[in-house]
Length: 117
Image (cartoon, rainbow, N blue to C red):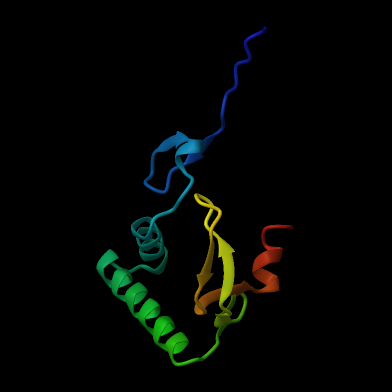
């Protein structure tokens, strides 16, 4: 069997250095705050406060049954999931899964189009 050598592209790190592409699978909350603070000309502490205020407001609105629409990004809402019967994969036994509510984000057309241009 012939050995194959692969060279992976190098990505620009959000921390300012270069790392192999496979190390950038997830941008963390801290990374997001650093980048947004830099772009907005704010300190990281100010951006962290703004981020937390945004998340708190979003959560409160959804808990109050409101839809939150961010034009150009998407719409957040709570969907009711009915109770159902499922199988326990370990035992094959039938179990009842209770009804619940789940938050849903439907991305807007312009946001989706940005990735398919």
